[in-house]
Image (cartoon, rainbow, N blue to C red; front, side, top):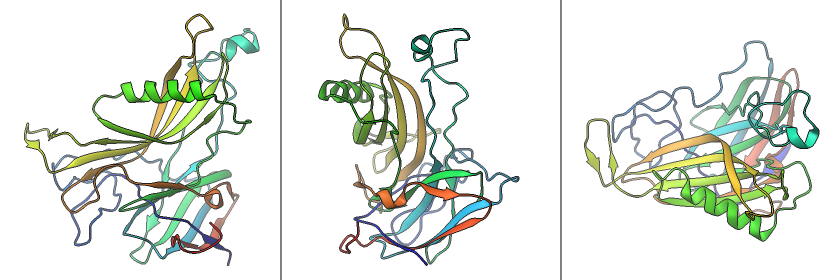
Length: 286
């Protein structure tokens, strides 16, 4: 079987169950969080398609910490970037519209205690993996299919826009930013957000010993012209994982590592075995 080697470590967030002996709570959508006792979204992840027979399976070894989840996303890139296609409009006019039909599916694998993972019910296409450990994450997300052309001014404006959005999270980190510059430019950002401030639960209890972490994909459009300068708007976000972090867990922003060997796994009409994936960052072939 083909062997993939991963560098560094990874962490993913998601819904949680009861606290375990080892730090880190595996992703388990729809279950109650152990600290605030609130239910987290059962529909964060896309259900397998009953009509699709494709899938991905493999095994993770040499994990730097507890594996919390394995997620895959199909590679999708809209031709336009806003709310709806303007019928009869020019291509330049349509470039300013958001595509409401564009969905960003996230599939969650079943994960055994010995870190074997399996996705089922995946439609035909190419998929990128996102692997979450307790103290870091690995990802192979393809953010951009065109030639990278964002300027330093674009990236600074994108970071500023993301920092001011969603004030619930007071600490934000952009792992990767890719896209195209210009009046109809588009960008995708893999962002990690953490609330380190006190958290108030649904029963009005204030928790000072926990944090909330979210890892998400952000899609932005360039808006405005030369008169207002470089300006970007957040058009859509897709949360990949969310964690409630109690006293045993790693707090704050965790490192993420981009791996091209986790990218573009082609799925057809059967389950594809990707073999053994090593998470030991000391090995070559990263």
